[in-house]
Amino acid sequence: MEVLKSVWGFFQNEVLGMAWLNRLIGSFLNTLGLDTTEKTGGSVQFFIYDMIKIMVLLVILVFIISYIQSFFPPERTRKILGRFHGIWANILAALLGTVTPFCSCSSIPLFIGFTSAGLPLGVTFSFLISSPMVDLGSLVLLMSIFGWKVAVVYVVIGLVIAVVGGTLIENLHLENQVEEFIRKGKAIDVPQEKLHIKDRLKYAFEQVCGTAKKVFLYVLIGVGIGAVIHNFIPEDFIVSVLGDNNPLGVILAAIAGVPMYADIFGTIPIAEALLGKGALLGVVLSFMMAVTTLSLPSMIMLRKAVKPKLLGIFIAICTIGIIIVGYFFNLIQPMII
Image (spheres, rainbow, N blue to C red):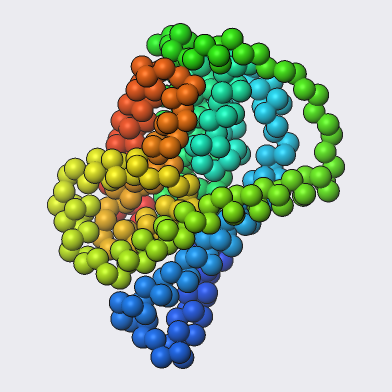
């Protein structure tokens, strides 16, 4: 058992976490005369290390997930979902959301297509919630920072929120709250050409290039914020606002995440820095969930497809779910970290 723990610890720290890279960068900066134990040197080390680590993981994860996604084009996904009914359809939609694009803005066009095709509204919302919140990339990235226990619990709870949220929306019978141009739209049954391995690899490579261009700026900003938090903001301040002393920390973090627009790659460095400064785990994860699921640009896009009442209910369900998850993780933090 100890051997397995050692092997896993090495995999998590040296492979996923790339601790060797951090040490290498630190040594290199020290040879240049920059003291990495000081605030400025530490910030530079954090920035270079996290930028390289996140972009490497991004390339690898997007390539793998895009290759998997090539087997599930929108029309095929719609047909698969159409075969199931009731809560099983919500569960399947939530699971399929894990192999779709990383940000909510990318998921909304798929949501519109599925709704136009006549899929139950609750099913499409289960997909819309899970897609940005619990994709496969989040599992690996969270594992690299927080460990496998946190990553697995996060993904499972995220899927539960997606299924429960979609089921609630379905039972409220809000079909008339979808904009008319979507309700009257019809899906075109386009035959899917058979892709060969070469085609799938090309598709995955193109997705890597497109995603990297799209998220690079947000990763850069996120890592920059993380570097400042990590070395310049006093630990006592972070603990007082987002630690045990503030029972409203989860709510504040969820609210703070809404105006931002980023995916999991952009939020990881901020989350890592906050946790290192003493913020509670539930607070950090609530912030990440709010950014990826309820960002203001995404809600503006979604408003084009649904009426204010349905949009409000969607936001309320997600917000309540995120806050519950945050306080839950605060309670179990000693057991999983």
